[in-house]
Length: 429
Image 1 (cartoon, rainbow, N blue to C red):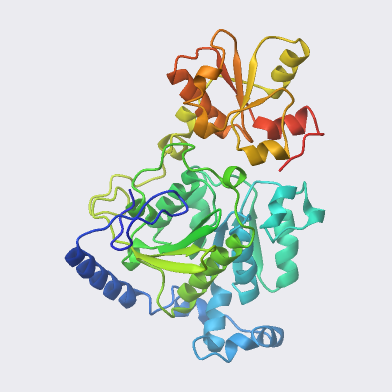
Image 2: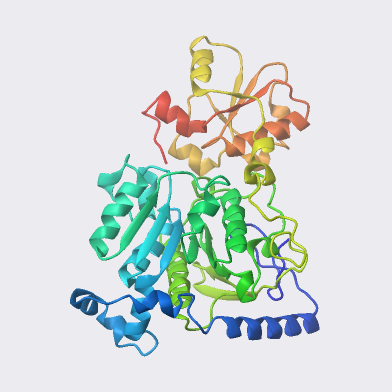
């Protein structure tokens, strides 16, 4: 469970709830935390020596003129932005708006880590990329778009997976990390390396119509991600965007909040989201703030840390163990279908997904109903289970195994792989 000091029973985008704590402890903890945070964030994370050699050209003075006339920014603040180095993890839904606005604001060095390619389904929310970029590297389209927005900045692109092997080396070159990742393993990794390196980690996440943002910075008096979520949720218990969907504009709101917090850190202005989790409900257009507390027993930022170097985050988050279910490829399924072998093909997606696309012969039993409807299946013949990408169906396989099914298989890659490799006439979504 997350450790918060205010906010009762709200389920966040990660499916966690915020429990109530005794009132006296709430007030005392919040007062101490806020006082400590405010003492530490009134100065820029960019030291004066870094900005002393920075000068703004005539073109930059004109480009940033709306910043320069603000007393909270001025020429000195713009020089801090120019001297700053910010790393964005991901060039997707959150990384797109964050990097766009950081580039436009004049952050001097912007690093982006991503190894994915642009898919048509990305374009509903990932505004760094366009239709012409489908199939290309996300970093290639990000580079072109950001250079068009601001050719004055330096871009450093890392076309690789952000992993335990390279994370510390990459983060070492930056002042702030903006975490736009979409999986728990990367979030724990980015948190840990930022704690080790004493770098602020500007966090955001989105789910359907809800989003949240905060700044994890134990060295500035606040908690870290592990203080909020000591343990990851069970693998596959929290669906991703491909499974649950996300309102396209929502990552824009959360990504811009991440950009705002990053700029405030660089300028040394305002009250940062350190020790505060901002939750946004787009359906209600409602912001709710949850006060967070530092966990003295945290294994990374606590008084006696037990983790001082990156670990195996896939194993920690249960991805490897949970993924070990019997499976077959889409090619093997096609062979069985062509050979007219006896087996049952079960689709565990939702009815609205079944209406969008389906594999001929599949029987729809949504994941939420699979346990109670298991008796509808023939135990004496093989059962092949599929969903959109293979995650929900892996969970369904385990549920059926628990109910005595010994000959049940997960379809690797789900209907998405079927459309890519077997039948392009099946719509992708």
